[in-house]
Structures are given as structure tokens and as C-alpha cells.
Image 1 (cartoon, rainbow, N blue to C red):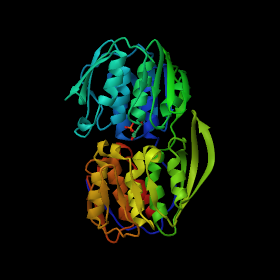
Image 2 (tube, rainbow, N blue to C red):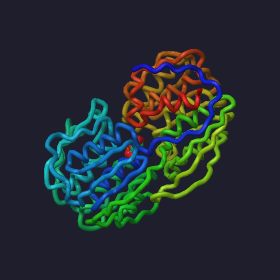
Image 3 (tube, helix red, strand yellow):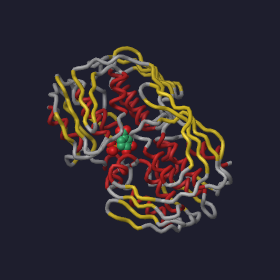
Length: 426
Ligand code: S3P
């Protein structure tokens, strides 16, 4: 599917976004192995989070979906059944990596696979700790999906993960729910802590310190009623669209502001963004608030080290903002971008060039000089949701029309994206 994006007038209005992708996955998995019924409000409409629900259903869990309201009839820690066929994680790295932690503890063999993009994403990072805990896992070329997981009794471990990855941390913690004793994960940089918060909400015994978290197993979780905050990573597209446009005044309500994610807001404010945080509340251990964003003179800046890890999903759209900033944007320490749904350094660079914008590429990042004008062009999502949405935003400030090829990729995290864009851009 192609989407035609015309230059926008003033960006404004008030919007509310679908539920956070990261949190929805966690609630979907944990509610399935909890005892009793969980009601999840504002569950993500994205295909990825529905891949997680599809896998849980195939493992014998009864799940009712009515739009964004999801009811999960959990069957307790030993309630999963061997699936009749291979599980399908679709495009979702979170599904395959986090669910593998649960599957490693089951008394049956599971095969889990995904689409072409997922079949190229590295799994050794979860296979190693799960093997140390006692699971036997085989993979294509020893590192790619499909995975064949021979579950069994797990031992607790104290694991220092070499990659800063919340998916790896979550996988080991979820496996730790089934191990007898204390499982500890240490990470090189702080990553999002939604699993720690969700595990605590569902009743697990968790201890968290700076870059270290432990879970005491075995644990029996209890079903809960929870509301998923709006997705800050989805909000990023509209924040950037508003910051870049003239006379913008946009309010985004009910957005997740977990401090391990909201460094994005601090960064944008630090480079000149006019973003106000209003009405902050706590729900299910997560912070939620409204964001008011207005047109701003953006200076540009450098994203590196811990900041890169904290904003890894937002970098494609920040690259777009960088081109419109005064001094440009440099991104370093971002080699993880090369193993996301696409090689996002390459796909950002290719689309920038198509739109007549200069970019210098490094192994671990890029530099986009500032004060550049996007030219309407044909760009491609390459099947990557965040690339589709980032370049639709670039199209709003381009001279002439932009065509996004394979634009439907956005539905992996945000099926309503183009409708919402139309609402705010007129
Ligand atoms: C996620 C963690 C990040 C992020 C992904 C979602 C999560 O991946 O890029 O979109 O929900 O834990 P890594 O764990 O690979 O860094």
C-alpha cells in the first residue's frame, strides 16, 4: 500500500494514542500465566502485540478481545499446553525473546518462528542465558529463528548481559519466575523497566537496583485489572511533526512517562523543544501524563552512550528532526539499530537521500547536518513500521508530495497512525 503525504499546514488539536507496545506485550504474557482473570484496558492495537496474544492462545489460554479491551483467563504457572503447531511471532522481536523465557520452563517442546525480518534477528543473546538455566534451544544457524525450545526444570542464575536489552532482561526474569531461588540480571546500561513494574503488579517478588534486578522463584502471579498508557514511542512521531511545523499547538493525552523511556522528552526540551508535561498520574506502577507541544527552534545535538540506548526506537524520527534543526544531529553507539526490524541506519540514510537530504553514515550511527529542506519523493518503509512513520513525518515538512511505499508496515505498532496524522495535520 502507498500513502501520499502532502505538506502540512499548522499542526494542532488533541489526540490520544494506542497503548504502549512494550507494556502490552508484558501484560499479555504475564496475565496468561497468572491465576485468575485479568482485564487489560487500552491494549495496543499493533500487530506485534496481537502476535503475542495469538501465541498465548495457541498455548491454551482463553483470551477475549474487544477492540482495545482484552480479557485474559490466566491458567497459573503450570497451565500452558503444548501448542498444536509452530508458534508465530510475526514481526515481533519482543514476542519471541520474552516468551522464550516462559517456554524454556515448560514440560514440552515448542517451535517459535516469525516473518522474514524476524528470521534475520539475533537470538543468541537469549539462548545463552536460557541454556545456562538448563533449557535446550536450537536455532537456524545457531542464532536465528525459528527456535526449537526444549523446556524443563530451570536453575536460577546470576547473569551479566553484554547487550543493553530490555528484551533479554525480561526473558531471563520471566524464566526466573519458574526457577527455584534468586535469578539476577545485570545490564551494562539502564534499559526500560516495564517488566520489573509489571511483575511487581502481578505479585512477583522483585528487587531492583541500578542496572541490576533479581526475582525470587518459583512465583505464582495473580490476575489484575490494568490500563496500558499511551505509547511514548508513537507519540514521538507527533512530537517531532509539531516541533518542525509552524504555528503548531498539539496535546497528546494519556502518554506513558516511565523515566526509563521519558529521556526522549528531556532530550527534546534540552535542544529547544517547547514541550510541557501536564497532569501526571500513576497507574499500575507506570507514570501517565499529557504532553503539550508547540513549534520550536531546535538546536540539534548529539545522542550517544546511555542516551542512545534510552531512545533507540525514536532515533529514525529524531534523524528527521535533526535535518530541520540548526546544527544537525549526531548519533553514535547505535549499532543495535542495524539489527532492528531493518538496518535502521541504512534505511534512514536511503530515505534521507531520496528526499534530497544529506547524511553521513558511520558503523554505529550517523550525522545529519542541520538547516536542510526535505523534497517530496518516493520513500520506502522496507517493511519497518518506524521507518514508514518517520518518513511520513518528513513528508509533512517537504516541498511537494511524498509517497511512502509499503506504508502498511506502520500497523505493526500503530494501525491508526495515518488517520491520526490526518487529524492533526488537516
Ligand atoms: C523493547 C526493547 C527494545 C526496543 C523494542 C522494545 C521491549 O529492544 O527496541 O522496540 O519492549 O523490551 P531491545 O531489548 O532489543 O533493546
